[in-house]
Length: 73
Image (cartoon, rainbow, N blue to C red; front, side, top):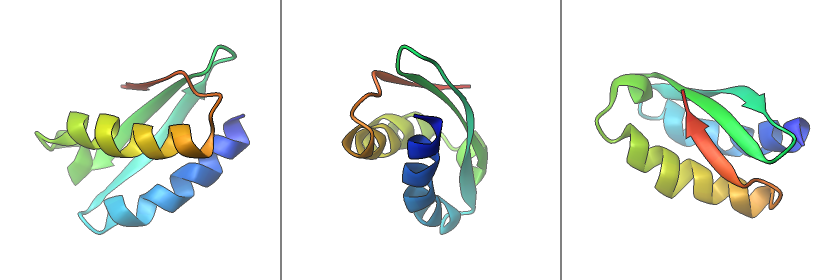
């Protein structure tokens, strides 16, 4: 599943990079919990939680239906 998540994140990264940010995949657990770290300007942006939940999580769950939850570190 980690490889599927990485491929999906590769589709998201250009959007984050346009605003000076990025996302790192920290861990994918067997029970479908994905741990991510927002970096660059995304890491300190006050809207980062909205970006994570409304953007990244939505896209990842569409691409990899096995995902149960996205957690930001």
